[in-house]
Length: 328
Image (cartoon, rainbow, N blue to C red):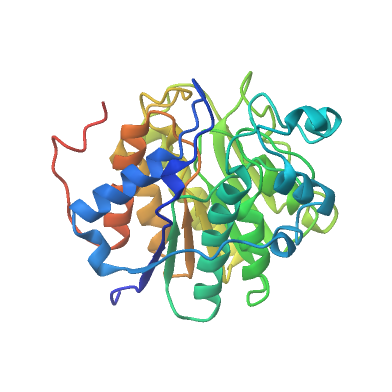
């Protein structure tokens, strides 16, 4: 296959946002990834864009307007005036109010929408936004560290040009927000591989297959603790092959949550970088317009290594330096 044109979205401010003391979600990991990409010289082979901040109108393509308005107005200083809304929109515990929260959402969503636009216009074959992949956010509520669902917004953008879009999720958590958004349509097929049983968000049963026109267009593969590279690959490849043959999507969105790696602070799988990366390589091998996004990942040095390694795989660059790529 000829060398694919790859674009990469990054905003230098993204690493400054801070969810708060002790919170496992650390936007700093996106800056760490970026620094590794610079150090390995990988940025030279990509077109680099600073994402445009997503507007409230763009967010309202999926999210309820009153919810978007609330995210825009709320700050750590005025929180006390919004107790009712905080409860209603599920903001507070897992999804805290922090300085610049709305701007963080704008950057994350802007990169994913921007990537989708590049793919739609044929300006890139692959678009990468490691700040995206926030798959738990719902229409009117925050969930699982996610406030705005950049993935849903990007898929809506892709649907303007493609009859069918395939969404694949290899985060350890079920991609519930994306599945829910497209549960009743056959224009988006969602495929999620995730830990199931006494685990957030508690959804993603093998029997959840979509409804109405979307029946059979949601695929869930629930997994147990400790799955390793070989077992994961033996499930992932045949399923994705079958989905590709049968569904024939025009574009693919791949959420690469790194919390499915071995040693993750919140995870319990046993994947190595190689095993996680093999999924990315396999999806790329179909040669379809591909949007690659981040997601979970809470042992941040491993997250940065993972996404750098996967960027190198997409670029067909060998940076296998055994010592540096060991998880630790």
